[in-house]
Length: 198
Image (tube, rainbow, N blue to C red; front, side):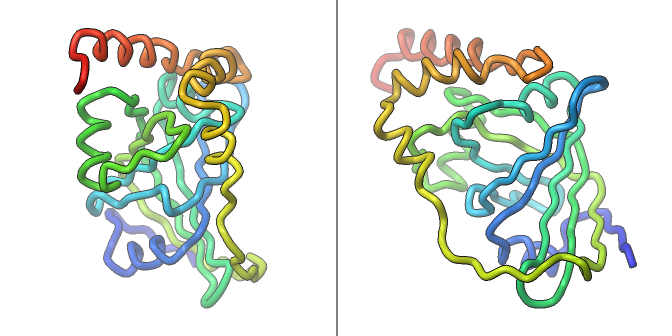
């Protein structure tokens, strides 16, 4: 049976932190619905109503476009081992761009100031509802290891190559909605010229 909570309670936080993967779903008012898998190690629970994850450069940037257009965001965690459970976090999301003061503060406070190669942005979810359900039909899986393909690609491509890729492939959703990423890159470069060495 489903249960609803107004916040991420301690036992729910423990469940989230034990997972290896989560999924995010987003949509604009019209167009396609996006669902993306994410590695849980990129996610931080800031408090009982707020989560954030550090997003690496990928083949698309649908979530950023949908958040800019609409803001609705759902995260889902499933127990693939142990007791069955599905947990969903509902709320409003927004993108936090690299180079912004908020990004730098979160990186320092919650990621040890360590930015992986290919870091693109952070995504923040302000949680207004938490739901759990049984998960009785979710299959059991054994966790093996994390993939390092994306990080190796970013290292090989280099910062300039990653930026060029982001400008070409991550500027719009598949429905043509803007992500705001090229403008954020331009802003970061302008700030770097104004304040060299920072």
